[in-house]
Image (tube, rainbow, N blue to C red; front, side, top):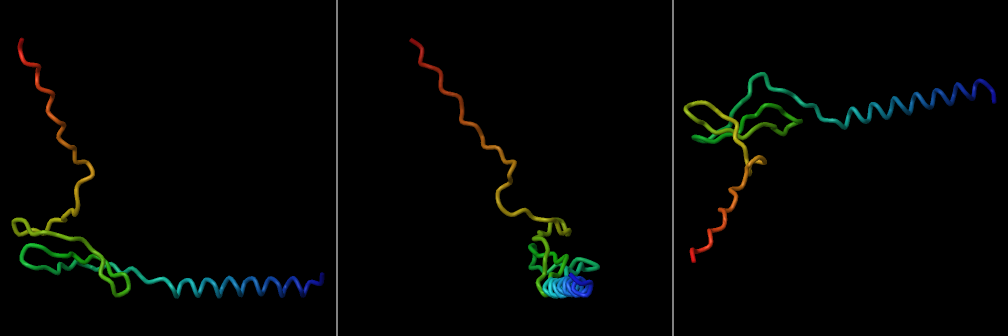
Length: 94
């Protein structure tokens, strides 16, 4: 195989890699952190925006307790233990 054919094959491979990389980077949206989180809120509940993913805000649900915004957890906690049933009643005396 002549050297020019290897050179052409290498050029096509590098070009394909460059096109693929450029296309992939164009598809990804940028995550933009905010310099200071912004709370969009009602009186005691809000949403703290911490990042922007393109034009979509990303953040945390917060509640106001004693004037401070505290992160809220939604759903039942995973470490919640169920109360065990009471022990069986003793048999009646004879």
